[in-house]
Length: 431
Ligand code: PLP
Figure 1 (cartoon, protein in one colour):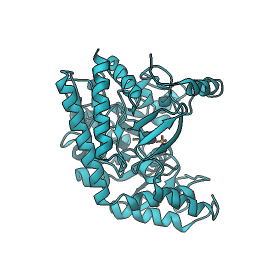
Figure 2 (figure 1 turned 180 degrees about the vertical axis):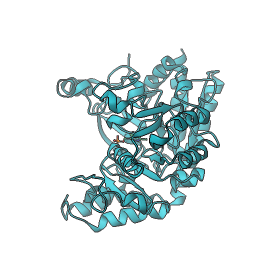
Figure 3 (figure 1 turned 90 degrees about the vertical axis):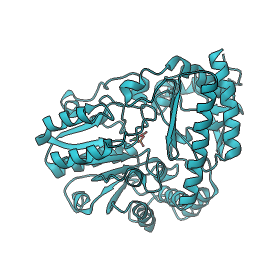
Figure 4 (figure 1 turned 180 degrees about the horizontal axis):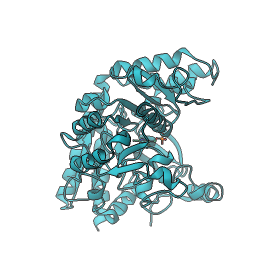
């Protein structure tokens, strides 16, 4: 039983359930992984959000990652407002697309060419199409518990809501297409090698989240990403880093800077649009020139490169300087260390970690190497902890199998406040 006021959220959710499946427009929002009813948000500022009943929460979901500057940051609001006065969409080139692309390439010089799209799903499915065209092969290899959006080819042992809801595969995906998606356990290079080598003549792509965030936070072990690079070279497959979640979070220059491994194609989403719908895929010009209209791989979008979304992305990346990034990482480190200390003091099996400003924890006595191992976490304790945290004004991702995020608005004060609240929440969850 919650101690918060929930009447207005409840009324809106009641109407929502008549209108949308599960009352939501994306499944993880329905609290399926923790039970109970989601709150309905009304507004956000900095590190905090307020719901329809006026309850305040310190937010560690941050719209599932994009809000690296926190809610309603002034530079983004001003940029969007300025651009909006000139019109909201044209469907012809604007200079803003060039400005955002140049900022991305400045941080990640291994990208020579990009294409902007509007969601991470579009980016990953387009990258796979390009990889299939380049290699003339059909199979792809992904990792159990990694989520690359909801395109048909990825809904095989996927993470995020698919993992939270315990769905191994989605009905509606043609079996013949699902059969082209091979899966291996994350961080298991031996198993991955065996699968990739067996399929080598028909393997188009290996796609991976460089730090897995969609079955909880699981970093790559040293040598894993290097091994994938070697395997892609050996088999002739295209290596795709899906940086929709990790991009502009795990390091200023993304996975290439963090791990020193360069993929053939990279996909982005979330932070690149600063809270508006932007995603992108890119890589070496030689590969990207296969995309229409230069090449014959077709991919298009009415709202791709939308000026408001480009403006939000530009303002976000401009504000996210290396020193701002370092500050966010510092607070992430404090939060993770503080939370680990709280759990240790209470004698709870617990593991937590972070790469840059992406973090996560499991109620588990050791670091899981992959989704298979993560499933041993104490999900019942997580649920109690999640609700106890919510009642004390901390909004964590509503599933044990999701990563958490930080923003530049989460300063030392907010982190201390969070740790106090989470200490009480853990005590309540264990009572
Ligand atoms: N790839 C990764 C790694 C993601 O985390 C997500 C979404 O969470 C996607 C792709 C899909 O992005 P979108 O929800 O924008 O379609």
